[in-house]
Structures are given as C-alpha cells and as structure tokens.
Image (cartoon, rainbow, N blue to C red):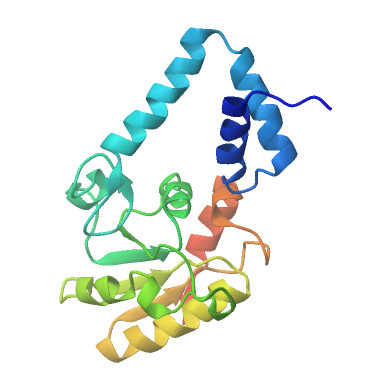
Length: 198
C-alpha cells in the first residue's frame, strides 16, 4: 500500500483540524500545496505566520484587528449609542456591509451551548455589560436564528433589560438554522430594519 511522505501526512493532519475539513479533503489540500510552485506555497506559509503575528482581538469589542482598539471602535463617525451583539467576527463583517448600521459591535465569541460545555463565563458577556454606559441607548441582539442563538438572545435580554436600555432583536428575515456570515446584504438590511423590541 502506498504511503505518502511523513511531512505530507503531518500537513494533512494539521489541515484536518480546520473546521469543515475532513480527512480526505485535508489530504487533497496537502497534495495541492505540495504541487504549488515554491513561491506560492511559501507565500501561503508566510501569510499564515503574518496573520498569527499581527492579528489579535480588540480589547473593547473583541473583533479581529491589527490594532487595539480596532478601527470600528475608534471611528468617530460610528455612534456609541447603539451596540449590535453578534456571535463571531464573521457575523460583524457581514453586518458591516449593510450601510444602514452605523453603530458599534460586540462579539461574544460564540453562543450559549450547554451540551458543548459553553456557558456565560465562556463568552464576552461581562465585557458587554461593562460597555453599557449612559451613552448607550440601544442594544441590538443579532445572534444566529437557531436554538443556541435564540437561547443566547433570551439570556442577554434578561441581563440587559434591568439596565433600562432598549433591547431589540433583528427581524426574522433570516432563515432559521442559517448563519449571518452567509446571508446576502439585502436580507441582512431587511433584518436590521425590521428589528423588534425583545
């Protein structure tokens, strides 16, 4: 039976650790990288190293950024009165494409999922509550429309409502079970426009 080189096996093993990449896909990707011209392969490796060295998380909103605080948090054109809460940085990026929203973001870093052992202390919930000051007038909860996202939204609304802040949830313009990062701009725009009190 044919056995590939140990270094190719190690590369495939590392690639298989990525989300959505199975063992067979990882092996195909490893072989593809092996066949790339040296310059392209080294460029890929350098880009991965550069991302790991330069990119971190904003200490205010927890978005990915090369600066701290991030460009969104320091942008004076964005209103500090509205904070939109999302699960992941990809969700913030999707919503940022919608020109109707000019507030700030807060990335939770996931969603409540007791079956996976993810509780409130595993998310950036305390930091969100600390951001709610007198200048904040509305918190928009934009967690994904699935069971865990809805549970997270309900939990957050119960924590925020006693602070006498308007709490809204994005409208149900998004299909249940989908993720924000895959929604088109029109759907996201309608979801923001049709948000309701929560």
